[in-house]
Structures are given as C-alpha cells and as structure tokens.
Image (tube, rainbow, N blue to C red; front, side, top):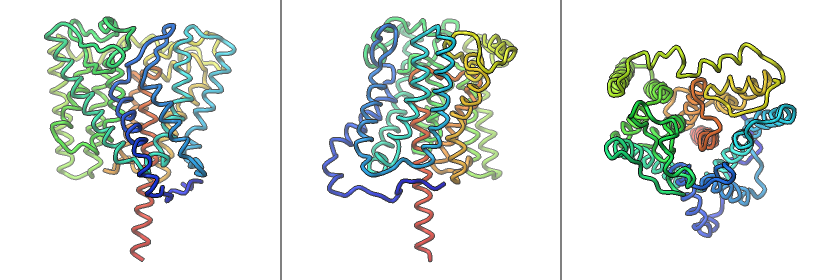
Length: 415
C-alpha cells in the first residue's frame, strides 16, 4: 500500500552519534513497559503506572524526531476506526453517563491514546535507527517476565507468600492484596509474573509470543514461554498457547514433518493441560464449562440489541465484544471489531502472509490471536494489554515496509 512517508529516509551518521543518550533512554523504557507494567501508585483509585508515563515520554521523543516526515497512510487508516470508536463512545457516555470513571478513563486511553502511542513510537521515527536495540529490549523483557513468572509461581506455592516490590513489581496501593486479584484456583495460585493477574499476563504474552519466538534462538527459553502460558491456569491462555503452536508450525510450510511436529505439540499441550487439571483437582468439565467460567450471563447482551443502549457505561466484561454491544450498541460493536481487525487487514493487504516465518507475519499472528481470545477474556481495559497490542501493530507495519523495501532492492539489483 502506498504511503506518504519516504521509507528510504535515513538519519545522518553524525546524528546517530549525538543521540546515544536518546537510544539508551528509549531502550530502557521499551524494556520497562513490558517488564514492569504495574509499578506505580493510585490516585483516587486510578492506577498511575510508570510504564504508562514512559509511553508519553517515548511518544514525545518520537514526535521530536519527526521533522518533515509524514505519517504513513496505513497507520492513518489504522487509527481512523479508533478515532471513530472514541467519538461514538464519547457520545454514548454523554447520553447515558458512566458507573465507573476509572474504567471509563481506562477505556478511552485504550481506544484513543494507546493506538497513537504504538503507531507513532514503533514506527520509522525510532525503529529506522534503533530497531536492533529495541528488539533486544523486547527479547530480554519477555525473557524476564517468563523467568520471573515461573520462579514466582513456585515460590508462592511453597513459601505461601508473594515477593512484592512496591512501585516496581506491584502498584504500591495493591501491596499485600495480590491474593484478591482472582488468581486463586482452589489454593493453587496462577502464574502472574509482574502483571499481578494470570489472565492479563497470559493475554499479553500471547500477543507478543509469535514475535518473541522469531527472535528467541534458545530452545529452552522458547519452551519456558509455553510453560509460563500453561501455568497461568487460564483456559484463555491455554487456547492461545495451542494457537501459537499451530501457527508457528504451519508457518514453516505444510509438510509431513511439519504436521508431525504440530501433532506432537498439540499432544504435548494436551498432556500439559491434563497434568495441570489433575494438579488442580479438576476434570475436563473445567475446560468445557457450560457456564463459560461464570461468563454465560454476558450473553444477555444479545437479547436487547440497540443503536444506543439505555444503561450507564461500566467496565467492559471478559467477553469484550458483548460488552461493546451492551454499552455502546450495534455501531459501537462494529467499530470495536474494526479497531481491532483493521491493523491485521491492512498488513495482509500490504502483502504480509499469515503463515510465514517473517517478523511481520509474527506480528500479524499476535494481533489475530488476541482478536480470537478476546471472545473469551480480553482484559481490554487492564494495563498493559492494549499497550502491547498496539506496540506489536506498530512493529508489524515497520517490518512489512522493511521487507517490501528489501524485496524491491533485490529485484532492482537483479536487473
């Protein structure tokens, strides 16, 4: 797809030298926002995290480097449904009011600000010069949350307490309250890492996993990532893990050996789930729960479909699509679906294949996996899910453009 940015523009070498401090700041913040997303405090019950503050700093740094460069057309088209959803949602809130200012604020941050952050920061403005360092920050951040998560999981089971570092691994106002965050499975606590909640960690890791697996060369660390997903004890994360395995295997091409690996992976996942169910004292009814894990009541939103609902806006539930329908009506649901799917559709329109070993394909897979598991547990308004979603979206567009430039350059060289 044509863009209005000169994708071949590079910064002069002298500027690279002058911005060494900038690169250090950007890399540190890129690591921090993934590794310590919950550190901070609360003001009137609203979490103010250092990670989200850093997103604003990174956004300012990116904007200061914009110069005469324009925003690529695909990024503008990606932001359009976000803007429309934000405007429609604001209209509905103005009509019906809200039951929770904190969750409503978080909703608009997720819909309007975080897409802007991801699409501008993870763009040529920073990636053309710092992509290698940012990739390393991403790689080490995921390694950290996986390793720390597995360690903390077993520490909590055996020691009977959590390791908490206020302002860093936990919000200072949540210190001593981790057990209250819906992470207890009958006395066995979910893997939460620094994300303080198993479902939030599982969803966030699922978005990053395909790209992480492209970057991670150590097999033991790749398996550790899958282990972390399963130890969340979250059915949503288990579904995501199977999708990641399947897409990863099929990306290598549909060959007899690929199908063998895929079958082995699914079988291994089945044994892992079976072992965890036995560990929890549960059976398969836990996986195939007709009550949808207490979510079946959310289906009532389908019984009263309106253009503009007549109820105050509240926190979006786990099945986020039904929540969008319930609180923002049919137009809200359609715009919500568009704002999640347009990045993927544009990536595919630009030639990114879903089944490929390219990094652009990995980003596409992460975005689509989230769109699927959001039908079970989206954790949409919770830090840092949508920050990571839009970070991966921005990376996906940059990888796609870079790949297109390389292909074009190779063709010109072959003439």
